[in-house]
Image (cartoon, rainbow, N blue to C red; front, side, top):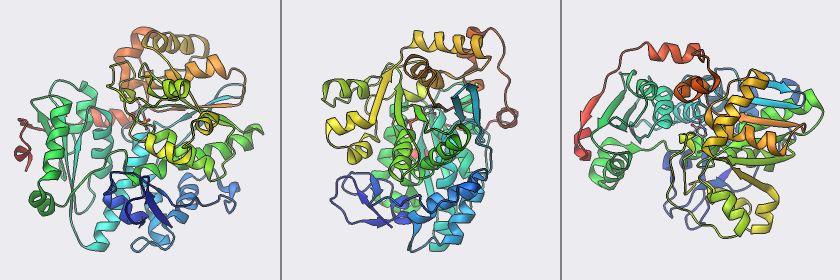
Length: 423
Ligand SMILES: *Cc1c(COP(=O)(O)O)cnc(C)c1O
């Protein structure tokens, strides 16, 4: 199977080539040339997540030069070693908890699949890699955790001093071994600029084998379609109907996975994107004019995106605005409503949700009440305890996976804003 750039100006690549490449040379994002059908799926086996992941993902690696069927199976077993529960809240209203991985957010799925895939690829090609990530919080933690101990790969994580939460900093700095954390005396933009400058320095980039693990990488997108296939079939089996998905969205990588699952033939009724006060997508649906903009800060900070990078992939599926409107629903939820929803959901259902998940829960309560629905829960509420606990007036229990991290010792190197400081 081949992957083409959304801009169609470079030649198609296989999955492993596209994963090592990241962004296409024409500035586009890699998407499947065609989508495999799920007709072959053995849906009696849907309780076994890694096996289901293999069934869904193997066709994308068909005829791949480097990764064979057995490799894909091993990658799935290695990457998806934690539970993916679909919990019932109320009648046909359910929640898909994607926060049981090592850093308690859904980014573990993409980061772990990417890490296992890259480790296998560079072993076969006998080379070494250095992954550079600038992070304002969650992505860096998931990437650091996923690549820790991977052979032949070093990771350099850059984060802005004093601008990540205590718990986030822990997730970036406890690893050691092949993971180095750099505390930059500057802003997130400075961190991003250092990464960009390093990539532009061709000599240095070649010498270190620089690569990125950011959210536009195909290796993060593909595994994010698996849990939509998995949970929609499971939902149908349990409730006899196709679910309406409601997804907390920022860069739209997670929801893009849902559209790919739908395109492959998963039993999905509809897909809705819940955004915070960053209204780029609902405004586009309303006006028909796409206007990316600066982001604004909200309580659901992992979704503070004004120019969603994966929109280019959605436009590739639905280029016509009327078709886009048929398939993409979107609502914006402001901070006051996020707070009210966290409180209401706890008071009425004794279920604790994070600020991101609260955006989706609001959309359900307002637009899908009593209908077959799956709210996608993107992070454990214990990661955002300073917001959640005052609202529900009780403490959020820290899950085992996070506790393990929080008890380890931090190590980081303080640097200025010159990229030479990290090499
Ligand atoms: C990254 C993130 C999101 C947004 O996901 P996108 O793929 O960027 O749309 C939502 N919630 C949490 C907790 C996240 O970390």
